[in-house]
Image (tube, rainbow, N blue to C red; front, top):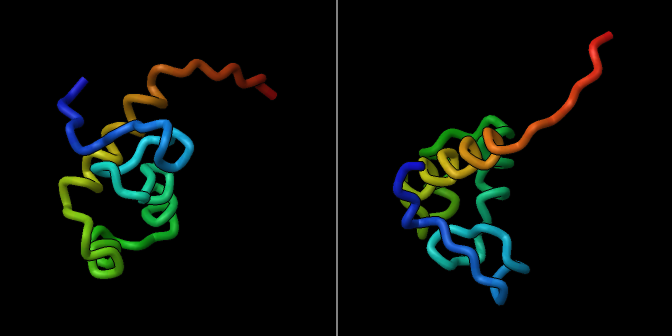
Amino acid sequence: MEKLDRITINPNICLGQPTIRGMRITVGFILKLLASNLSIQQIIESYPELEVEDIQQALNYAAWSVSEQLIHIRSA
């Protein structure tokens, strides 16, 4: 796994969800913004406390998390 030093998990912040640098901005929230077709630049303009590397690490964390899960899908 790549170095993810900007992703933190603290049971006292956002119920233990992975967050960006201990802020109350979760990885899931970043992913939802990206899924809503916001660009990285738009996200940073809306949340100036974030940096490009924060968003990149959120994507990396999500990719690694998803790749560790097996989901069985029935074929039609």
